[in-house]
Amino acid sequence: MATERKHIESFGEVSRTVGTVFRYLLLASTLIGIVSLGVLLAYVGVQAIQPFSADPAWYAFFVATLVLPTIVAGGWVWYNHQPAIQTALAATGIPFAGLFLGAAIVMLFLDVFAPTTWLGYWLAMVLAAGALVLYRRERQAGFLEEVLASLVAFAVFVAIVPRLIDAFPFYLLPWSIMWVTFTLPMAAAVTWFVGGQLEDQQTGRLAGGAAAALGLLAAFVGPYLWFFPMPSVVLATTVVIPTFAYAFVVLRDRPTQVPGLVFAGVFVLGVLGIRYLAPVLGLAGPESWVDWQFLTSSHSSNPVDAGLYPAIIGSVLLMVVVTLMSFPIGIGAAVYLEEYAPNNRMTRIIQVNISNLAGVPSVVYGLLGYGVFINAVDLPVGSVLVGGMTLSLLILPIVIISAQESIRSVSDSTRQASYGLGGTKWQTVRRVVLPQAMPGILTGTILALGRAIGETAPLIFIGYAAIAPVPGGFLSKGSAMPMQLYSWATLFASEAFYTTALAAGVVVSLVVLLTMNGIAIVLRNRYQRET
Image (cartoon, rainbow, N blue to C red):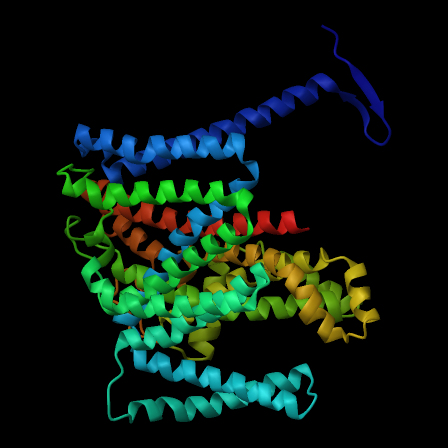
């Protein structure tokens, strides 16, 4: 067969056969990589979950309760109600994402921070926000002046409010603090969401009141459902209230998307049936290593007793520090470079350096963190704060670049329309550019956080502990999930650890990473639909 050739200017002769062969080679290499990774993950998953240890009757119950109903409901939505697919994914993902968030909050306030301390800082933030509103009413202040006034007000209230709370002659119950600081803001968010979606503020206020009442009710009903009052309030706030609010809006305002709620309900009921109904029927499921004991136990030299709990809390604290540092600094830098910085040589040099820093190996950031935060600033070696700031340096270039791309994607006509209506530069950025760019910014930030939570090399260089107890705060020594897995694979290397605790830890880490990446994908798809 003759090889067809074409002459393309500036490329010379191009062979179609060579191009086709190259394309199929790329496809084959991609498939080999995907299959190899799938086999590896399946091997690790089998070691951690132990699926072949379950009773045959449990498998029949699993298929009849979860698999078949989910397939039937999914096929019904896919073939007959295409617009409801996104609603099905959202209604399924909201409770599970809320479960992750609620579990992290519960762990932090059970073992790390006192709820009364959190209440003091929360009240300081609320009072500082109220002071800023009053300050705006008195005078037209610029952005920098508003920021300075907010910081001063927060510093003043932080110095006063926590001491007043400690001096109270009575003790506040932990669940009541969670209800005030989490449930009431969630109820306000429900009021805004429902009222805006339905364009009915009265219904929004009723929905917000119902959300506040539901959180209060959870404190008294929770103990009868295997939860203490404080975790019950938190989980009701992060799981039940957002799910019900979203379902309520769909039922009232989007009748064509109701089949998506049906799919989500079938799936969630199937999961609950496997979790709670199967043991009642005497059906023994897999003897999985990823169980409640593994998630709530500390490290042990015996793999049967080893757990990941201190490492999970350490990772949560790391992500709190990383988010608080990288998110505002990264967005601020991106806004300045895209909206305010002049197009001169200095700006171009900064942009090139940011792009280069995004590709620097993570080990270099570990050395930088040790030199700056430990040697120069004299912060405690291996503390959570040092680890979080080091990882913030690692992902900061990625956050800046992704935020720049999102800001750049906002059309200039939108900016010009804002200027035409009399908006200033900062008003245009704050009320027009950032709201439109925020989904893309969040997508890039979440993906960057997913990289940070899996890093090990920077933490090793700053003296982060491979095995540590639950940290007592941001200046305490702590561990992290990748460090714990590294110690199990090296310091405690044995066949027992490889096939039990290590495999279970890898599965937990993958679930966390896939959840974060899934949230980023949902945000990206939603942004693409809206634009």
